[in-house]
Figure (cartoon, rainbow, N blue to C red):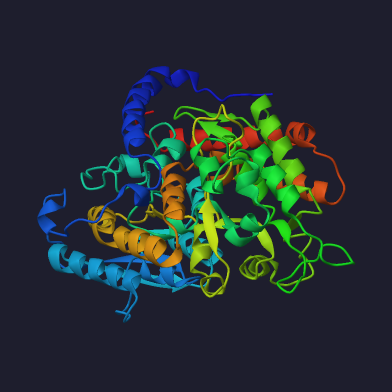
Amino acid sequence: MKKTHRILCLLLVLCLASVALLAACEEAEESSGSSSAQSTSGTTSESQFPLEKKDFGGVQIKFLTNENSDYYKWEIAPQEMVEGDRINNACNNRKELILQEFGIELVQEYVKTQDDVINTLRDSIESGLDEYQVGVSGLLYLAKLTDAELFQDLAHIESNDYLDLSKPYWDQSIMRDLTLLDSVYFATGDALITDDESTWAIFFNKDIAEDHNIAANYGVDSLYDLVRNGDWNIDTFHEIVASSSVDNNDFGMAWGADTPDIWGMISQCYDSYAFTVGCGQTLMQNDGTEITVTAGEQSNLNAFDKVFNLLTESNSVAIAETTGKGSESYYADMTSMFAAGKGLFMPNRIATVSDPILRDADIHYGLLPMPKLDETQDEYTTTVTVYWCSAFAIPVTNVEKLDATCYALEALAYYGMEQLTPEYYDHTLKDKRFEDDESVEMLDLIFRNRTYDMGAVYNFGGSLPFYTGILLSGLSGGSNTHASTLESVQSAWESAIQSFIEKVISSREDL
């Protein structure tokens, strides 16, 4: 069922591009995954900054972002120091250093939601205004304006020697997975922390695991050993979930933090996608020269069948959109239930560890990666929520301040590696949020292997909710319609892919 899109008239150019991409991928393997996992604390001496020192004379670079969390407000240009908050103060110190050393004033403007970010940027750009020099938002939202050809191609900014996306403080996984025909439209890495916050993992209740003797049943001392031994796979995970559910209610399994029941897993429909990626499968594959629909490959069908069977276990898996749909806050209810000890597992983004509900919980919990498909899968891998994984994009209207913008982004990323990442990764996540060294070990593993799926980020032809739609039907009593559903939508996906490729080509004078 696989169909590829090839640009035959560009073979020579693409061969040259492939050589460059191969070199980039080799570097990415050495520093793959989240830059947070690679970065180490070092000195902040300006002399180590890789660019030649320049003074931009106090030029103001304005970033447009949203105000959904403190991190979104703080991670570029906080307005003031906050006593006792190391993240805010690290961001503030970085902002002041960039102003003092390079004469670049970083300013953030906030709108309420991610949609507001995109709509505001769109209106500004289409009006020809250089009102915002950088947009910061979730990948899914930024991709909407990329498709509308409103962002600069970061790999082909003329006369720019400042932005070097091959450096380790830029996330090389996003370069590997989202660069097409040597063009890339947004970037993330050590400059930000909300990208790391959006990474998917599995939280587990240690007390429930101990009560059920789960580790002993598999001949290991802890669930961490299953991961280390390569035995943390979707079948084993399903067995554990199904055997750990306890119905303490004569009226059946109930939703809510006050339920007497214990669920094997507290989940949401997005997990259908996250588990599938954990099994090494994606909606689409981008090799740098073409985008291939992979959702119909046999390995994908096999993986999703296991995921579907897991998530439709109605007696052991509580799905927020169905089991908890009577509540207006069923996503927040998930964390409340887990914090109250009502579930063994809860897949969610890393940001959940900073939720006050979980921070103040009396339970003992740890962190695990998404399970593999089987023992033949080489690495544990995970994805991000494309709704909240933030990145930078530069509007096409940014011309006069373009050099200063590129210089500022490189400085944000470099000093993020030196100052911000150690505060977030070492002092906030490792020291404050987890009580065991094993979870920290898992955190390193999770951040090291992230996958960015073109089909999810760009939502070609409405591809993002593919797995969740099938799951929702299954939760209502339907069967797994993976193959037939793909057959009905694949032509729309491929048409959208082709349209995007043509736009990339038309924007490049060298193609």
